[in-house]
Amino acid sequence: MTKLDEKSLWKLVLDADKSNYIMTLSTPQAKGGDAAKCLYNLPCSHAYSLLGVLTILTANQTEINLFRVRNPWMSDASFTGSFKDNSEIWKTVGYGGKTYAR
Image (tube, rainbow, N blue to C red; front, side, top):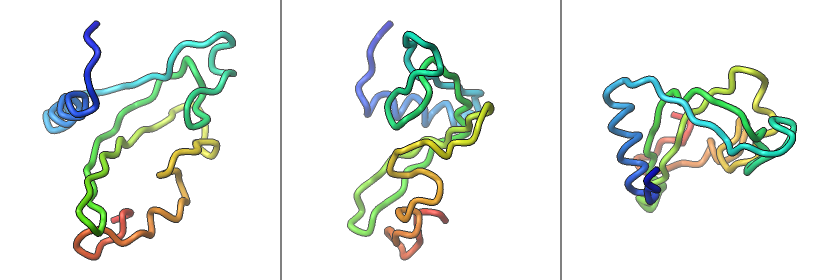
């Protein structure tokens, strides 16, 4: 399997999203299966639906690439990434005067 750099991976996923492909992702396998925790407190050995992708612009026009992920098995209350549900970052005003939540 070829390892992609971040920019190449983003382009690949963005193109697939624009083509309306069905997409999934998963966390790495771990001893203990999904009882083990991976990055951002996500369960290891777990599959997710990738619903779409979006690039947002900060007030200083820095791009942030976001993946919209759905966990069909449980709530995402334990996710600890910057853009978790109910994070204050969603209220941040970005480029064009819109909050990231818009």
